[in-house]
Length: 235
Image (cartoon, rainbow, N blue to C red):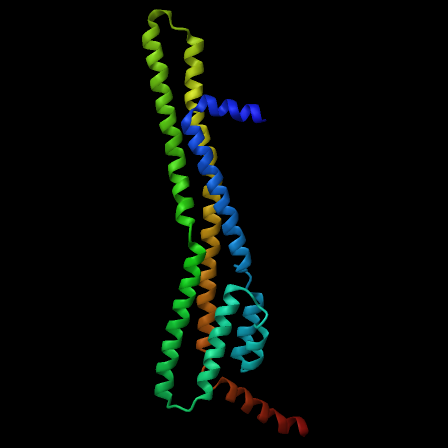
């Protein structure tokens, strides 16, 4: 295996060596991004969705407490929004002033979410660059190899050996194959990361909208509903 790799490097020349370095760097970035997405629990929203449903029913304190142990990106942002809104509810102010402060709070939470999503998207452009430049590097190596092969053919004249010519061509095409071998898996990884990120962005928007549009009077409405059911229960 080691001998095969070293022979490929010798046949492909410096272009294959560069592609090998790029592939190692790309693999390191992919593993780091996978760990980052896993730590942020991207795509895991079941617990947060249940908390938002409780929040909209008027069980605000319970919903916020249920998210204390949730370490996901969506859980932290939604819990921050819930705690901030509950602080607003405890402060005496006019409805107009509350609407203004809630709008500012919504912008702040949205900016915080955008910042966290931007951190998740970091280095994806670098991986996307690998998917574009690796095939070009392979093609560049092939062109250089073909130039060298035809130069040898010209120098040999009529005594050129077809076998050596064919050998030179396949060696030249080796760099293109290496470039495609690097680009294809990296392209799959980039698409997967970007898809997960877009789904996370859309889900965050839905969850935060559900928190902010629950209404300031949701706890009072739930309390009145419970009071209205109480006499019927006693009867």
